[in-house]
Image (cartoon, rainbow, N blue to C red; front, side):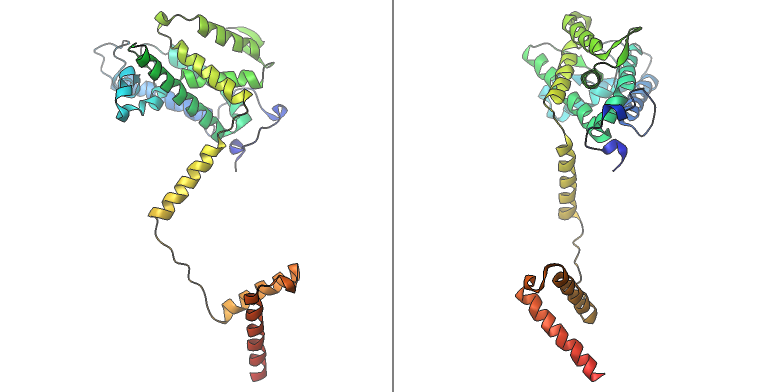
Length: 293
């Protein structure tokens, strides 16, 4: 098990809270994936019509979540993929999310481990997207959702909860992390829907972080469930292996050694009737061989 897969919390004094780049981390992988999608969308989308809120480019339009997708279960995969596309009108949307992930995400990943970080990130993404989809359909408000903001703000708030006194930059001002947390909460509460910012998604991401931290949640069971599922699939669909049980003198000798070791560890009274009979038979066989020689 690698250092990034540890399923226990480490002492904060052992953590490196400074941002750093390492392709092995979940943070770096997510940043690369988001940047690649953004660049690919710009390259492979035609210049006309120009990017707008109604046209985000070929890749973005394919991956983002539409409020009408709730009526098409075959489109529900966009609940996840919308978190990898960002506003094509400019780089600010992408930069704000990826910089937040870069500066605050690494400490959170070190805190919980790489695998658990992935689980937190994607569960927050799914919850944010799903609740957005339900809300917009209940209210009859058509819309489109794109961006990793819900999952990223969940990670940012986990940093705040875990390291409230750590100094961070808010705009250009160094402040304790808890001040950043207050700013994130209040700024999203005050955001008006007309701005086009998915403030509701941000607030759900904040609630996800609060629930995870204050209720002491852990999603490791999902990893165990996945491993159990893969094992079951292999057993059902894989080749049927037959174990050849070796017979003859070699296997008898191994069985005798096992029984003798058992007697040495737990005493002769621990032997089963079957083991006693085998040992008696094996002893007679060995004595007969010696007498014959």
